[in-house]
Image (tube, rainbow, N blue to C red; front, side, top):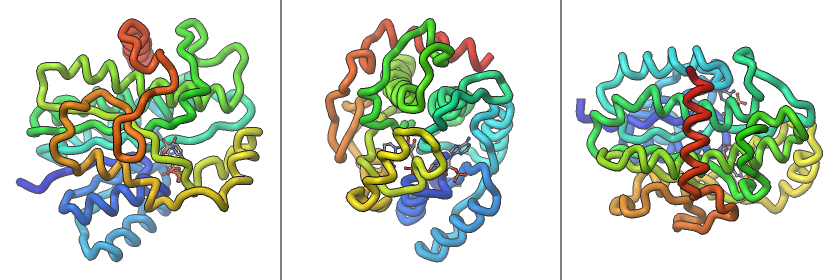
Length: 279
Ligand SMILES: NC(=O)c1ccc[n+]([C@@H]2O[C@H](COP(=O)([O-])OP(=O)(O)OC[C@H]3O[C@@H](n4cnc5c(N)ncnc54)[C@H](OP(=O)(O)O)[C@@H]3O)[C@@H](O)[C@H]2O)c1
């Protein structure tokens, strides 16, 4: 089949839903990775009706569970012969109290970083088979509140929701930087991005102080349609290969706020820690 295939995580809501819709409009088959079947079906119905295009498929996966991520990747490799775009988009703002997944990993680190890492790793053979494929990692300017501390990467000490979130978004950028190095001789490019401050479901369910401030500012935020523009740009714009590994904002390469985002040694160390944690 010559039909291009895109996988979008967190495709039922906010930036992921609008990105999926735009990719359907561009003629992609879109594999929507969502954790809630009802929300997934509702979003699929909406974007199918809006685009008049029924090329959206759903795969149910809770990205906090490494076994589910592996099973989902296996299902994708079985069902599809190519993978043109992988959009690691699903992410959340945690609660004020530290939580761990069934794998014993701090929840924000697991969903916002390790799932990006693991899904990409598991889908690498399919990305490699596909000409000019791309991995797009949705990060955030909130990475400016993050730091890379290898000995406290899961915030056993000094946890707060803003630290956990800021760290995870810094790790999205560090992962992109190192992934680009790992892909040196391959026809795969990768980018990270800040979508803007966007009025989605983000932070709605968090009881953290960060969420209280974020939710107060909703009136002044951009729409999901606007917030998805840089993700869509990185999926569809030709000729951006020379920027592989970089961080984008407003559809342009942007300077990371933290040096760790492009520090070769630190990015490699994060890669090694992640490899160990996904087994
Ligand atoms: N909104 C902003 O201002 C902003 C700014 C900078 C960066 N970002 C980033 O943009 C990305 C998309 O966020 P959004 O603003 O579009 O928020 P959103 O509307 O809340 O969408 C987040 C998506 O991620 C999914 N998700 C969360 N945890 C998951 C899990 N364990 N397994 C599977 N799916 C999971 C959610 O599923 P459910 O619907 O089932 O919860 C939802 O589909 C995130 O990575 C976020 O960090 C957002």
